[in-house]
Image (cartoon, rainbow, N blue to C red; front, side, top):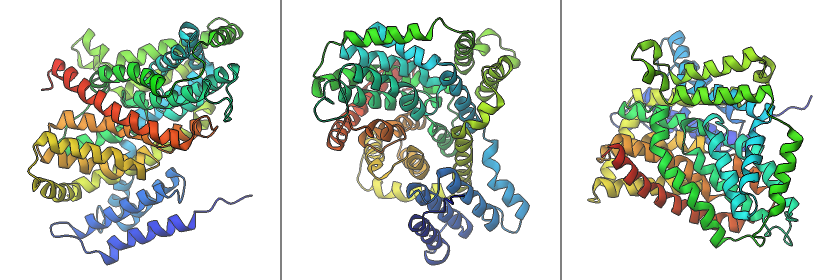
Length: 488
């Protein structure tokens, strides 16, 4: 048996950071000693995640262990402290994402995800720009029910993208990568980032955003509220970003009749839509209907008001009863169990940091610093968003970024006068959009960067450009669209 021990240096750094809060740095005035020690455990866990001392789930489990055994949330009450440490597992949004992982497995297992992508390539694939839009629309359709942007962009769409590139003679080498492969790779990644911002269930860390908004401002953001708020600016970005990249990073091959032929061939090989695919289609529309609040529109009876997580269980139940998914399929979906574990740990610690007053203390500290600048609430919000986005250069995970910074930045913005709902939603969108800037910004990045179609310099250069464009597009789009929605 080959052992997979902890990485010593990152683990040692995380341990030292935690000990600083416990034994070296005294808590500031107004912060309880146990709250300060909990902050040490939280920061140490984030450092361990960033440094990859253990897989993220393993680091999170250590965090749960430390909270329970040190009793920082309930001194002298070991049973209650352990209950606090495990309380994150009762969060319904965490289970919504976990179940959505299981359901997304159905798209991969049945081949429906690939069929959708090939269908759009067949429709739009006669030109390279058309292929990029075909894959973009496939991303948009799959994103509400595939919370792993890595599985969506890297597992479903990347193999199709790669096949099309190679059919055009574009390989990941300096002689041919620029024919179509480099352009399609860059577009695929940037589109994956945009769709991740459009739905709570489009990427795993998004529920951390809604949890932060709930903890700080006591505002419950529903699935439909997020989707409606993001849809117009997100759709505009999906329409503009491929076109802008086509102009500033053009493929050498503009006409690609082979791509449509390849997609047609693949669809023919797949044959007609199978029963299990029809069941997946039915579950897809059923989930969208429930998550959008459709049952409540039919009747005002409380029984017709279905919780989004309960709706997810309904969809999963259909797939299990029909045999589209088996219990073994669920057991093998490691991403789901991993996500439920680390989400539960991080949400638990963030919740108790807020209950014990640490978030409020830090927000007041930053608020006091920024208030001396004499900025309006809008100017302060813009500065906070820009800092929040570009500090992602130092993060290799959206989860770590959101866990470490979202609640504090959101709290400061609200304290400085930013409208809580609007600022929280935009900061939530920015939590995904910030991943555009580097080749390690989120899980999809190394999958698409790894083959070598796009150089690191190109990735960072165009990633910066697209990040700025996305912030402008979402900023202007949200300003107009949210006016229509009556947010301001």
